[in-house]
Length: 81
Image 1 (tube, rainbow, N blue to C red):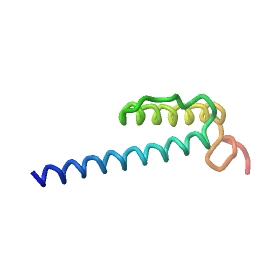
Image 2 (image 1 turned 180 degrees about the vertical axis):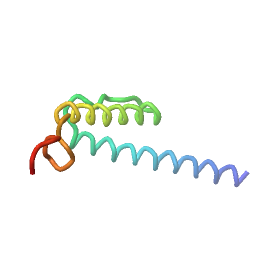
Image 3 (image 1 turned 135 degrees about the horizontal axis):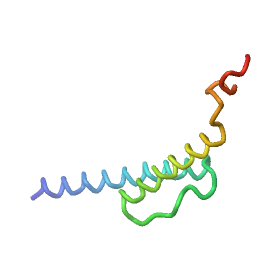
Image 4 (image 1 turned 30 degrees about the horizontal axis):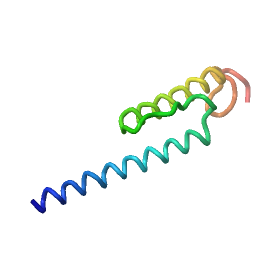
């Protein structure tokens, strides 16, 4: 029975660590991504992770639309140095 209690604590701690990681990702998105890309989410891990992933994808898509002809060095493709 003690092994089950220990396993339960390990699961609880893993869930707590997962929520802490998702909070860090959410904070980073809130601080760096455009307003409106991050919806509020419910109290479950998977929907929260899904919302964060969608916010990152939306941000990347917006950046790609804004800079569609810009290379990683900041010049437009085909532009002279």
